Image 1 (cartoon, rainbow, N blue to C red):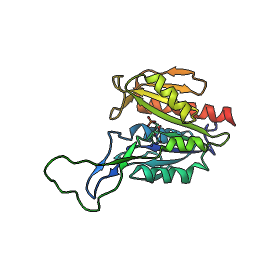
Image 2 (image 1 turned 60 degrees about the vertical axis):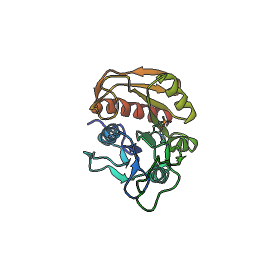
Image 3 (image 1 turned 135 degrees about the vertical axis):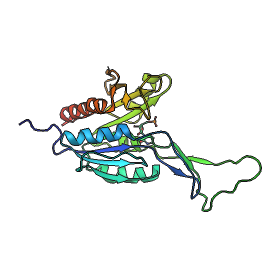
Image 4 (image 1 turned 90 degrees about the vertical axis):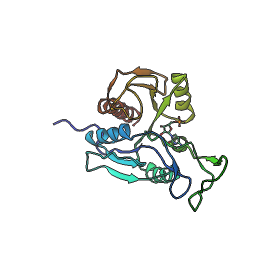
Length: 223
Ligand code: C5P
């Protein structure tokens, strides 16, 4: 019987959107379904890894009971959870669609409707992936996603460099069948040598397998 490729490897995965509270009933969110990240977590577990899945608000569930799931709501909570588990992780795959901005303050009461327009001041959130990239240890593998609408490969390569990643998964909203709520995806993987591999339109489970194989390959190469 062949040994599973990721036995004894701890892998941190983020998935889903974040919700940034405006007041007790409202938030700023996005269209991420969490499907891609959950498919990756399941695939990594099937390959033998110990998976920690930090998930924003989603209706997804994992197939593998061994996955340790940590539910969070906001970008700040996701950052804290990632920092907690990163030190012991051999690899991280960051799929979450983290809010870039969050309300500068949360109103303690529901904001009342009034005449005229309403302004909500926003402040930048911490870039979780970039923070982990700055702390990356020898042998750790760090992967991120880029969802682009223009200059896709250029922007993805810039993110790869600025966040100190080992590879980035590019999915384009211009590709039919790719993106947020679909069950399929079409990706290009760009690695730290700027080597590009483009895959065909596949189910998110098959895409997850391609991504996880790349993780396993890089863990082998770096260790
Ligand atoms: O810079 P951009 O948000 O396009 O980068 C996307 C990648 O960075 C994704 O892997 C996403 O999970 C990660 N990210 C993060 N924390 C943020 C913003 C993005 O981890 N605050």
